[in-house]
Length: 164
Image 1 (spheres, rainbow, N blue to C red):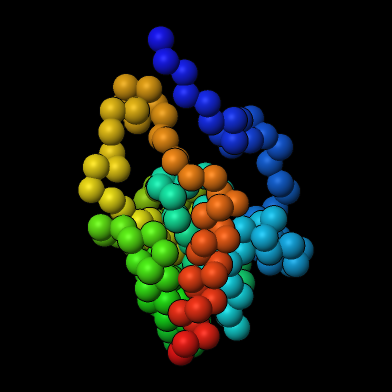
Image 2: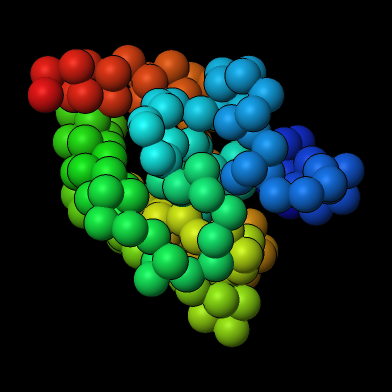
């Protein structure tokens, strides 16, 4: 029998859950690297998913705690889309994926893990990134440590945004 060690998964499975909304709490703490915040905009921010579907899985969320995109004004929507564009460019540059899944799940029924604070997911994809592990072992293999991915993405996002 082969063993796959992924000790960080225990934090997700049985770890202490923070009170309140982490998408509201994390930007207030000013501990960006610890909380995986990659960039802060005027109305929204880019944060890595601590429990990613793939390496480089990030989210863009408004600072405003709202549950639906139709509650954002045009400037807020435009900034989210602009940060999405910059993020895709940065991920392409430093991770070279073959494609992306980008989207929002609005409401619990639609699959939102955090239903009361909207956020846009950007998930890089590579040919062959799906294997037997999720099907047979209910396990997703993430081949790179979050800290290493954070440093790589932070540098690339800063470079893309500063070039604008």
